[in-house]
Image (cartoon, rainbow, N blue to C red; front, side, top):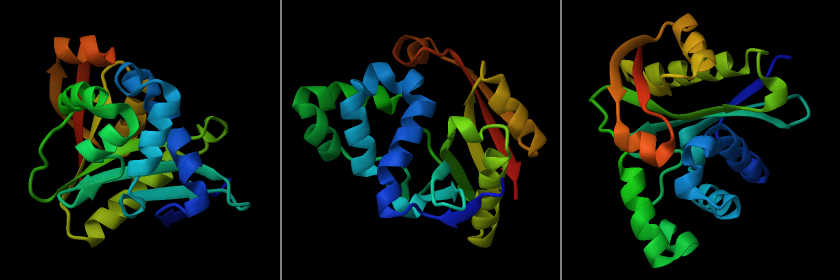
Length: 194
């Protein structure tokens, strides 16, 4: 299967893209962003189609997405007003603080992956690698020198993909706070020079 790669997602694919993102990251974000219906509403609300590259099959079904973050925005970001709209004032307040634990600054010349998600039936078919390559090409064309991502230390399948694509581990992080809030303790920062 050779996916059709394009910048953005079609308006009719927004719900599919939100679902893929939640399937990939709901296990990590569920305690903070749940319940699922609210998480889906939030993700679909804040999704920035100009900060994502998508892969579809020939019939137009979404196979995967790779969101990214620059100084100008991110694929799934949002503001406090978005959290309030979905979760109410108190729910937004504590969720905003919890999500702040994940925030990291971008070094000049760096673009960051803001989530890579591939549909279950398309995994192992090269969709993830095609999306990483497309984002790398886009980043290089825009003048970025590095593509950075964070991967959970226990996610061996993702780590193997990134190793194969030329990413190098530049930092390791152990965090009890992340373990309490998100259910994982160790993460790796990996960088690919463009």
